[in-house]
Length: 125
Image (cartoon, rainbow, N blue to C red; front, side):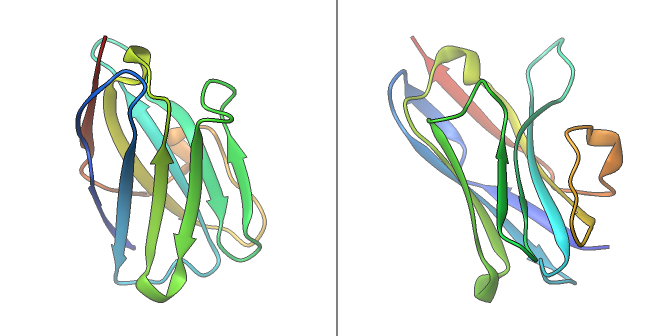
């Protein structure tokens, strides 16, 4: 399995920006679907965004469309989540996840077998 490590979380004011990174080792992101998920205390893990590395297709949850951008630097084996116009409701632990896939992705976290450790994002009012 690919090993994933997230970084870039922190404390920001509402309206601010953060860029999260998901660095992979063991495997490249070729032929992988990579998803970003987040989980707030007492809530289920929810889908945020996904990218299919083989085709470069991008997908976003409605709650983050227009504010978040997922991208990948295959040479660095890194996937990014650029988060702009952050809101307090974006506060959560953010995880990246990966699964081998040529064409598809899933918004269901149970579909993914490789997960990072998570990075905390806190947005103050």
